[in-house]
Length: 146
Image 1 (cartoon, rainbow, N blue to C red):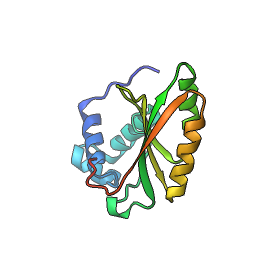
Image 2: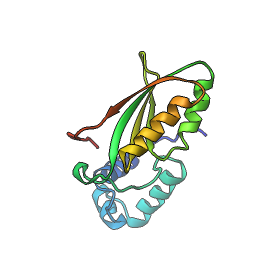
Image 3: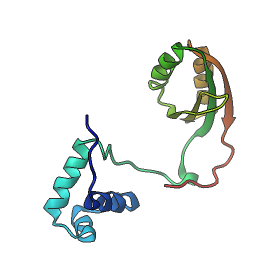
Image 4: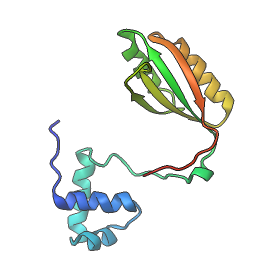
């Protein structure tokens, strides 16, 4: 699919929603100087074209339930790609980033209990294409940027 070109109004709409995704279409229209129906059409297009993938609730750091950890993963060979596809099936794996250096992947894990983090770590370590893992447990959140 070709990459969609965003104009200045699209960028302004996205900026306003990034600051406050709960804005009504009427309020959003007033902020960007368009009619509500024009904003509605632009939002539909941005959603349809995959620029806006969804809307979400983010809890404050002190309100986030459960346990968080980072799992550093070293892979081996071509089966490493298969392991990444398998990782997508774990709901505890919130983010998977390929990184440079000795580590191939950094996984952000979130689960209700430490036992769940341990289970995921053990299962990931057994996947074909995974050479080793290292777990970094989040002791205390400090801050998070939007």
